[in-house]
Length: 384
Image (cartoon, rainbow, N blue to C red; front, side, top):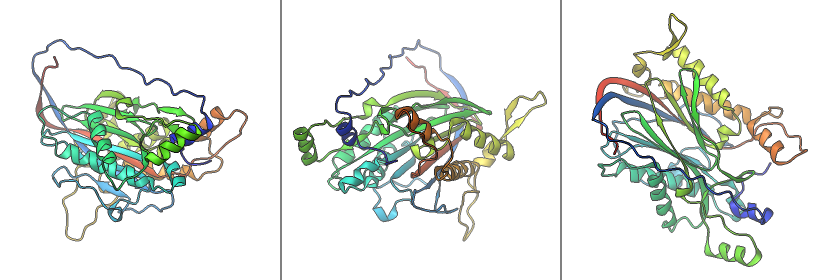
């Protein structure tokens, strides 16, 4: 199968098809509530990644987020990017709010046909979102849609990026457990709690293998499309689906590119996470058989004290173990020829009569957050 299409490729094939309207979400109102306090959560966060043409490496394929290393993010040159192909990510504190922002972006591979490196868009996009989150002055919390918009605006104004496109999933997690997520395209997330799937995203697609995507289209290309037919679909951050979640101690939140979702079902991820959380003791079965969270889960997600010459690897924390296992499983599934993968099922649905089996070889990006309670309390402001 060809790699993911740009929207202009798709319109050349499907000029008569109109994109579905983006679902509208009603505005919610809240009655005034008295202030209260709830347990403060910490988030252990790690990323695991592997490019489709690269081999896994126990140290170079992992990123460990350290909330105490407050270094101003910058736009990285290509030589300093992680070995993740067209996939990119960011993890950063949100100013001094105590919240953290995370995101995954998947550069649209179809731009390669136009001589464009999709990684230029996706990696710069994540760098710009990280810069916006890190420098956010507050006091009100920034939303993931706002971060997405700031990153997209910066990419559009970056003269070094003449063309490209990307999907994105961006989340902002507060210390009180509230998490807001904006998802545009076919990257996505899954929220797991005590051996069960608590919530998950649905992909936004204009058609088969053509996800919603943010794009920069050169004027010359736009002019050709206007002359010879086809139209450019201008998906924007405001088209992202937004969801809100309440994290508890022991919850696991996984963000990933479609290199994971095309090769693993939700139950595959649940099985891996449950096995590793149980094996580590983070989750356990109580006397009545009900699942529970270990009160010492924070010790499993804490970064070890650095030692001279020590290099952290995929075994250093629980979140890095989980992220690496998901990434490695997706990588293995992607090259299986007889696997009935999510992508194979999507091909058969889109192309009736075509018998397709196997995974989809692609770049893979996973970011895992594990929540733990630190015993302190955080004030909750009333929502008016």
